Image (cartoon, rainbow, N blue to C red; front, side):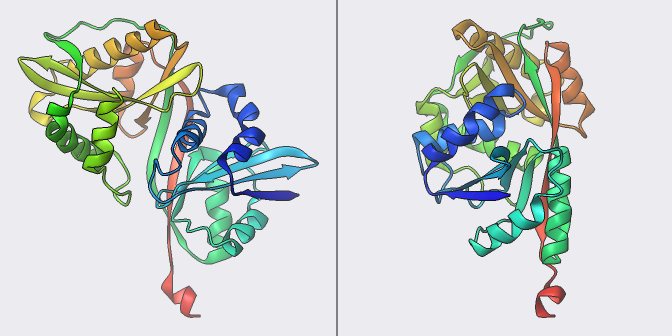
Length: 289
C-alpha cells in the first residue's frame, strides 16, 4: 500500500477526480469541496490537507480535509478496513488535526472503528445524512409568492436564517457562517428566497461539480412552516438549475427526518446513498495513561 500526501490541490484532483466523476452524484461532497478549494484555497478557512491511497498502483481511497471541518473520505476498496490503520498512523505522523470523519456510511464506520483502536478516542455520531439526485422536477402544489435571488440588502436576514439552519440541521461543532462568507455567496448569486409579501424561505446552490450542482441551506422560519414554501422554492430552484444546463441536482437530508425525505422525493428527488459524520472525542484517561 502507498499513501501520497499532496501539498497541491491540483495534484490531488489530477489523481482522484477521474474516479470521483464515475459517480458524481454520490461523490458530490468531496468533489465539490476539492473544486472549491482549487478555485479559492482559503474558501473554508485555514487551508487544506489531501491524500490518496493506492493498492497495487490503483486508487483505493481519497482523503480531503479543510480544518476545522471533519475529514472527508472516499473509498473504492470496500469499506477500507484493511487500509485505515496504516492510513491513520500516517495522518497522525503528518499532524493532521482530525476532529472526525465524514463520507459514505460503510467506510466512515470502518475508519472510525480503526481510529478508536489506534487512539483510544470515543466515537460519537453527529450526522446521519442521505444524498438525493433529481433529473426532472415533479411540481408540487405551489404556494403563493415567487422566487428571487437574495441581494446584499438581504444580508442580515440571510445570515440570521443561515445560523438558525446550522443550529437545527448541522454539526454543532462546526464554525458558524461569517458575515463575510454570506456576503460573498450573495454576491456570487448562490442564495435564493421565496417571497410572499416578505421573504418566507431560503435555499442556496453549492458545490457545482461539472454536470451537477447541489442545493443546501434550505430553511423556513418555524412560524412560516406548513405552507409549502420550502417545497415550492426547492422545486423552482431545481428547475432553474436544470434549465441552465446542469443534468442533475443533488441535496442532502437528515435520515432521521422522514418529513424532509418525503417532501423531496415528492418533487422528484431519488435516493443515491447514505453518508455519516462521526466525531472523535478524546478519552483523556487514555492520553494520561
